[in-house]
Image (cartoon, rainbow, N blue to C red; front, side, top):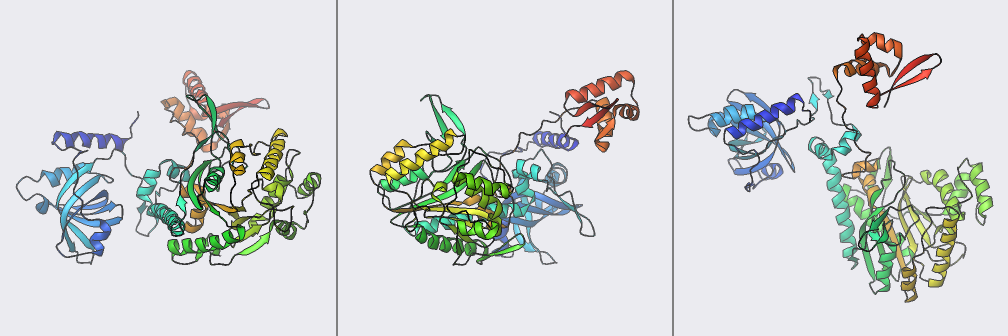
Length: 563
């Protein structure tokens, strides 16, 4: 492992601490009785406190020093005075340990007394300090110049997502996002618990990936010698519980879909699903309006939430727009009653990529998603989907070609999906069989037939309404984040590229090419000014590492930097 200069220095300090008999990673409990926040809010002059946290800054002036300590609730100023810490003749603990062997980022414990500085800053006078964890890597802390300009911020998204632990330390607003996420889920739990609904858990590994149209992840169970799927939805298991006699159940579900990734999609995501017996989708619209208004107020203090350039009002009531009416409004095409062939023609006129494997439901979904969805900024219930789009949904009571379903659109994206649940087992079997026909035509997102779920329905499920709310997207809205990666502690990432160690000749060639991105091979060789032997080894090494590519262009060779 190649260490940076700073990492080498910190390891030397670690060894010197041990030479002084100081354990840099003590096992004993440290008796913390206060935090940065409580010390300020419940301030009493001279009050004794024991706090702990990271050393985030310090200004050493001889035998005294002001520093900042950061704990889970913020920062507080601390004052180190040599004679307060070292009351005897031996000043090692201040002169050596504090001044020379501590680094920014080290975790320390402090025993001291509260006082107020001449400029009014609530501060801890340090009487004793203990090293609780010596850090071996320097923190990427931003720096501010005299004009207030900030440099070296830790703001590269890829680094932030890979090293979320560092992101949380140096970017306080990131931590606030995840604290708010917990508040949002707590509000939902309280809202449903107060109504008597039961929070449950259902299987993540499933023999049938049911409850949604999506491409699943496949795995294998060795002991049972059967294939299993990571769940794409928990719907069918929750409805089994309604069959079993529960009137209302909900679950915060980790779901997995082996599909694309973008700013609003992650292969692993969180959905809250709720099922309530003896209700329909009209009741669920009213309940959802009430829930989202409460979430907005609890998390932001108001029903109005700023998302990018838009101000979104979550106060009820929300607009209700039938999906076919929405398509007609935003495309000019009335697709009601169209068959697959007609819908393909419409889609192609709208410049959408479609193929013959796509059924009526998927074609309507594609048209609405690409041409209409982005228009709905304020919360809007898109209702009454065609039957082909909704294989688990009850037929519309007024129009047998439609179903009693809504999707809630907010800021141009789907936030929730709800049905009056289909509880006719014969109708449900026919819908599953139609999905099977789509699968045979090449639709790899069509639903599987879940025979056990059909058996459960044959025992009788009462009229039920169910909803799924995307928690990640909900948190994005409530925290004004445009990327799902910002509201997941550890989003999925491509494998991290291993650092390549280059020899001196390789470094010379690489640094020249890095500035130009591409150069004629002869020009690069001339600029490197190496012997023929050194040049040959250097360029071959870079090619082997995958950093450089040589291609023929006309009669000459061109050297390209590989990104």
